[in-house]
Image (cartoon, rainbow, N blue to C red; front, side):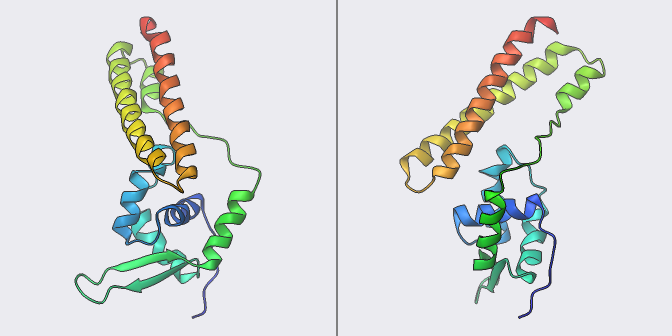
Amino acid sequence: MKSKPIRLTPNSYALMAVLEEFGEGTSYDIKQAIEQSIANFWPVPHTTAYEEPARLAAAGYLAVRQEEGGRRRKVYSLTGRGRAALREWAAEPTAAPPQLHDEHMLKAFAGAPGQPLLEERVAWHREKLAELNGYLGEVQEAEGWEASERALLAGVAYHGKMLELLDSIGGRG
């Protein structure tokens, strides 16, 4: 089957990285894996898990097989070409700067009362910290999840530092 050339996006690489880390899966499996892993630092639109696999398969980066029975879902896995593209991209010594897209900050800039926003954000960071620490415990008990462990450690540190920051500015809102 001849593949057509496509432009790979950061979301393409995100999806391939999830398949590399978790193994083959249906679009639903991919969506679940994204939500439990990279969505904590790389939000991916819901539709990406359903549209991007077919696009990557058509270009030869993923293999696709259809289940014989049941719902006859499509199951995607990385091909050698996809694995090579992912490794090449990951090895590049540069990355785009992070982007902060924070509605809390936008509302604060627009003059919203600070304390209700602050309380809601502190509660959210505490919940995320607990969630990530739970995932981290599971990953540290398993073998072969070093990349996930590094990402989770970064997420735990981020939410911990955000709680420190919000605590330091708490009396100013």
